Length: 118
Image (cartoon, rainbow, N blue to C red):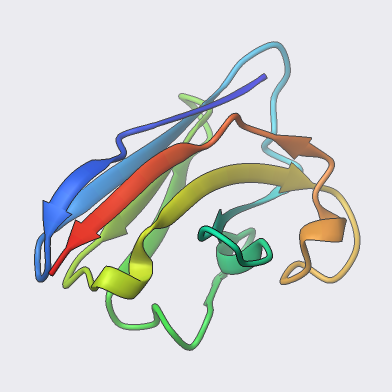
């Protein structure tokens, strides 16, 4: 029901835009977020959007989350990418809970790999 896309290989300082297309249901009443998991690390919060937006400290000022409820699509614009941003990025949606915690999300996309070369 959530399909993430847009990942790829980019050099340090480059940009990518991830998309998350929802199908089968509307997520307009859900908070939605992007989380990522680097090799050997736990899944971590990146950004979320509901009535407002919130970012992790590590991406604030470089990433921008947005959503188009009419099209049921969410985006993550990633600028000034760093090698430490390398991870599988997941889009997710939830109804309740601490929105910075992966446990708050009920629906998950399959993930899209972002690799930032130095």
